[in-house]
Length: 118
Length: 113
Image (tube, rainbow over the protein chains, first blue to last red):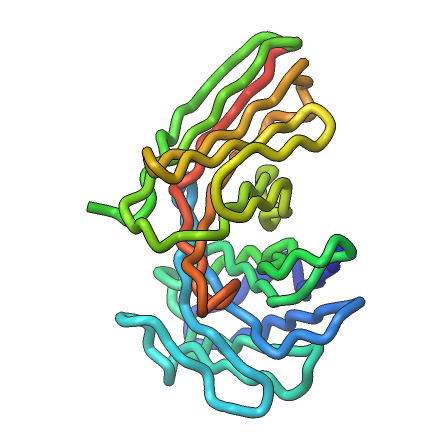
């Protein structure tokens, strides 16, 4: 099946610093990638949708200047949390749209990145 | 009203039990229905994928879609402790495909040995 990796899996940083999270589709090309955040015991909240080579589309209430998304290639998207604050602490998950070996067109998720801002 | 409603649980069952997980939805345009399994501190993994109404079986898992009632289910037979996870339903309308998934809040399942 389709494999998506995320790096780092866990990051702890000081308030005011910037953190970059990478999302890679390992065995397929993803024209569209998605970034979600998830708070404990809550569902996924879509932050933005990014298409390769174009600007990301952000969901309402998500600050695009704070959460910078770059989708430089068909296999790599990055999310940079700029000037992170404790309230940005969350579980960030990326997904990539692709096809599984069974021909299923859906989103395949990375393992997530746990961000803790001190 | 949310687009997709899912009972968050938690749900605890003994090993070997049959588990029934459900979601209801309000948008009759939804055509694609998915179930994801998410282990603690991990990303969701696709478990089942169905199109329109009907049943789909994969090993111990059966997904059912009843579009007339706007109701989908996931059944787990002979549940195992390794099935303990949060199960998220997701669905999308035609046209936008996988670019527009609507998720339930997830049901946390614990299978007790």
